Image (spheres, rainbow, N blue to C red):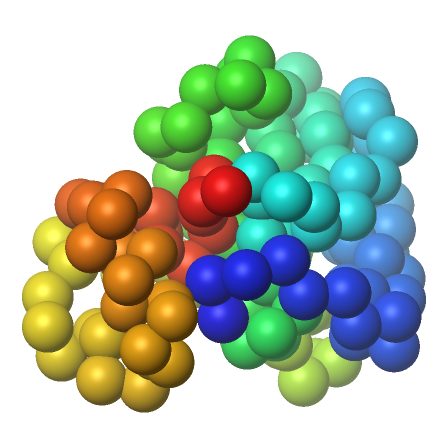
Length: 140
């Protein structure tokens, strides 16, 4: 869950639903899609919904979880999470959609019980403070 995870089928589903949600909300893509890589465990794409702030739509393929954050410098590690625009579209495709409240909750031991030993070491080293920082992380 905390390591970069490329899942072509899940990524394609997320991408198709992202396009559907952006079209339904009269938005536009503002960046190209970025796949998980060293230093980022999730897919990311920039969008703008109507006249709203630019957002990044995030996808953790390991847990099929979609989130959104205010778009910011890509090297910033503390995301400002927001609710996912058009979340119902992703849910209809079987993807889970995280809320702002869920992602901003403090990270507790109960969140870590399903992690591998290596993932727990990453958490101990990087010390993310919120659940969202664990699920959509910058670990190297």
